[in-house]
Length: 171
Image (cartoon, rainbow, N blue to C red; front, side, top):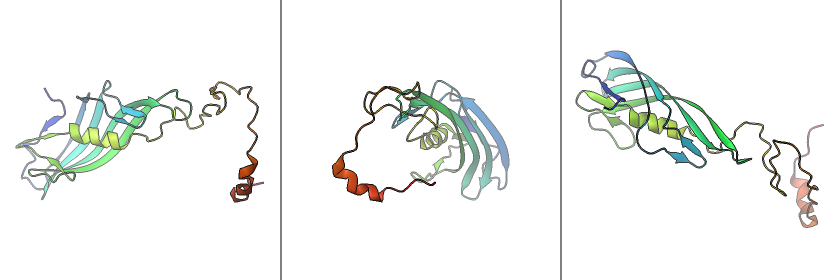
């Protein structure tokens, strides 16, 4: 049983024919990881789409919702979130590699579309929250839990000449 496969016999070769379709299921296969974020395959992914027959094939326009887990880039703690991605893709009998998806005789498979849309929307620098303070560069303490007892580092005098390039803070 392939839950993302949708029968489209009622739309094929009928110009202007359209209908809404909603599919909700778990992605099969391995989880995709981009940098420090992984697409979750243990929770359902929802694809809500309008299918419409156009001259080139079947046009799918809609949204896909999923979730991700990862590691915060600043504090190395757990991070995660929801993904909501808009898409507009074409299904053709003879798909062009990287440009369209395969239209089977009377069926389309929305799983590759959902997987690709969600993967492209994974954060490249995941954070558990936008105001994460990260780790102390000296002792490694998690600054989200409180300040550490480290003495602030003394700037290296050899780099002082470059301080003129640093923008001055607004007053």
